[in-house]
Amino acid sequence: MALMVDLALAVDVGGTKLAAALVTPDGTVVDRRSAATPPGDGEVVWRALEAVLLELTAGHAVVGVGIASAAPMDVRTGTVSPVNIPGWRGFPLVDRVSALVPGVPVRLAGDAVCMALAEYHHGAGRGSHALLGMVVSTGVGGGFVFDGRAHLGAAGNAGHVGHFVLEPGGPLCACGARGCSEAIASGPSIVRWASDRGWLAAGVADGRSLAASARAGDPIARAAFHRSGTAVAQVITVAAALCEVDRVVVGGGVAQAWDLLGPAITGALAGWPGLDFIRHVDVHPALLGVDAGLVGAAALVRERAPEGAAEPAPAAGSTR
Image (cartoon, rainbow, N blue to C red; front, side, top):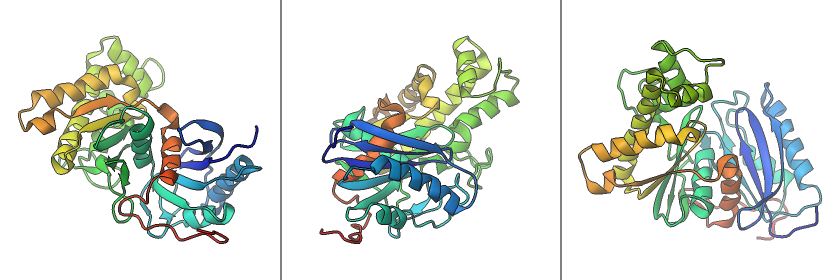
């Protein structure tokens, strides 16, 4: 590939995949690499990510690095402790990446925050003043973008909408609480709920087969998606009441079945009495798909320091 200028290095860290890409200012991914997230201790995982980054950046200069990571994290120290990467607890990810790509800023945010940033700049969130991006997939995550800036919170964990308690005493969540939106609306949760009520998959019992059953008219499968969408609508009402969110973009694996999930969300919002600015929030499916985390991570590099995050210290050799 010919040498390009003004490229940002985007990194997307997840429990199953470690991905990185070179991204232009307009959000175009021009090259990418990925590897499976290996089991093992923190150094094993780091070496896998390090190999991806070294291969991708060979021969390329970058203006900065943006990292989208599963949470929780602490952006003040640049450390991450993803629930789905047991080997990383307080892992100094920003320092490690800074040493690998010296002289440029390295910024960190949650993967759902980066999805929201990507949709704000290049997708269904364009024109919003107060955007909530939601990821409804294996878990439920969220991120806020206010007037073009990611809102991270003091440590980078703002937007954890998957852990709003919607049903006190409800199903057990992975976080240890009961009745969280993640324990109701996520893909594994709706599959489990349907299976417990007699739904039988024609093959592997997963979100895709549940969606196929729902489209074929199975009443339990349809009820499962309705339950998920209603829970997402509950999350939206809380976010709108707290932050006056004017638009919500919903992505993730469950949201791929938007024909099933979308009407449940919008129908619930329209059917509940209450304040107009809550009931009339614009809700849209995400447009950017699997690239959203990478495109949003690159956007971190190109915006002002996100609200609630300290400006990163210059890396060794930086002239900033």
